[in-house]
Length: 229
Image (cartoon, rainbow, N blue to C red):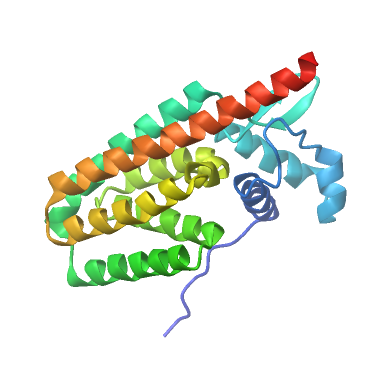
């Protein structure tokens, strides 16, 4: 039996994945200059695949290119966050509604496993790992909708705000409520109560959006005040 083919990972794609992760993890700050030459030297590669990777980041909205200046990590405004979360709500609502038509016992087991991982991270107060499983849960819910185009659009939209996700859990109250909301979403999904799952998820995402926007506006105010002193 012939061995299954593995996807070929080009140099450009490897560099793109590395840079995307660094941006989403917050290691490259919003507004930071992604210097082509510096990145090439750091990764010990030629500048050509770095240039191609930067172009893909720009195309996906994670970076922005200014003529005669270079490529910079995109700085998101409150309006950007608002619009991105509005699209997330639409896509996740579509997936939740359609998931009840195709959900299987295997899917239910996977949902319960992810939820348990979330609970474990919550009990250990491990916010970074919690966010990883939070991401995994929402992406899995979208896949349950059974529409590959929706899944592709969702991944692109989601990656744009991934670097801000930790700000949605900045308060203990929000962290506490988040795990309750996730538990209720999953429980309603597996009992085919998609309307209640959708309602809770809409509230969940709206609250996360508000926390992120509040954090961004507070940070900008502090920076502005410091400049005026």
